[in-house]
Image 1 (cartoon, each protein chain N blue to C red):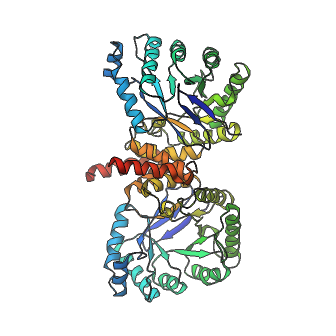
Image 2 (cartoon, chains in turn green, yellow; image 1 turned 180 degrees about the vertical axis):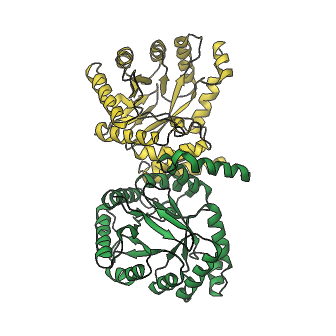
Image 3 (cartoon, helix red, strand yellow; image 1 turned 45 degrees about the vertical axis):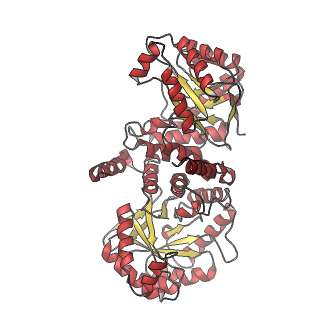
Length: 288
Length: 288
């Protein structure tokens, strides 16, 4: 059975599923590695958030990942403010992204709709801290198949950890199985060209065993390599055919967005090619 | 067992295989739909052939498809002349492409090396006419799983015809199984978005049951749709992950070539990313 994961803002619903168009989670609303943005956030200036939201929406994002991880700030307060602001700017559902449990809760408490929580691991203490929040706020959650000891380099071990997460989340915390979205851990191909095979094998296993939705950080794969967009534009169609149903990605790169939309067409998730043809006409009208 | 197909010119060897880099068969040396080229060929002017060869080689072709199907000409004579000319221009192996048996034989008789014959079907009379030539000239052959009655629209029927072709070619005509390259029949997605699913299912079946190499006319898929290169650039990586090991394609489209090379990297057919990085450096040096 193939599961569907429902996300909502106050007014808009987005559904992840194996027979649906791929879900683009815009990744840019995140200060990691951006010093000016970090300084602005420390000073309480969230204007860059509005610009980043506008750019990801214009690029075709279906959901927005919002991360406010800035050292030496009250991340919980900042994330709550950012989420309120993003929900004023757009009706897209939000993926609330933090490694800080208090920040996740602050974000969830102000969010209007049904959020995606990014993320939990297979570690018992992380599941104990985060899954009750997912349940309390009726959210969905991204789960990573790694534990405290390791990021497993064998697909079979990742699949065992997925089994563990699904079992614990559903039986101990009452999370609906369709609200678990697995991140099968995409890692840089430049370090070792076999790591992507492990990720793809994991994806096929998750689809075939569990029918769960999946997401991943698509840009990780090309990290450190030249011509990153071209690598991502090949990785995403291949991953989609292995079962990936969404990705956290920068929608400002048209080549990546086109690769996803073309793969939707090729994989039969764009009936009659209606979306492909409509997008082409829109670009013609816009003169781009 | 995964088979490898060896093609050769007088001096160069190209091997198709499931763990090897994808083989790009340049498709442009073909007058179909080109009225000026057809008229030149009727007048014995083959200068466009030289230009087309140069363009396909520059684009990164590994093998060249040569077709001289011009109405109202002696195709056998023309194809033999074209093959001699192409072999003067380049050391790439050739895919000898004709629906006329006499033209295939004329081409094979002058070819220096080990050619790929394009193509035979599952029809008994076509196999009886073409497979003895493949054997006589020690060539490899592209086989299409259709018969006189139909192009089957079910993957299972195509796989039955592949079984039939493999059985007849190996047992009755003594063709080595690794010299059979299957074209799983890529058809236009614009007519019906499910046809590509059939092709992909057929590819996986051929890989898993027979381990044979495959090729297809990659541009067929996007026929009639807008933004054809973007569709091809998503189709090829997906097809490669389903077992496609070569394609007949126009290497003058950089987006298609980049998609193939990136998919080689993602699928683990470019160890250490050496080819990807080398191609990037070459483009930098060329200033493109």
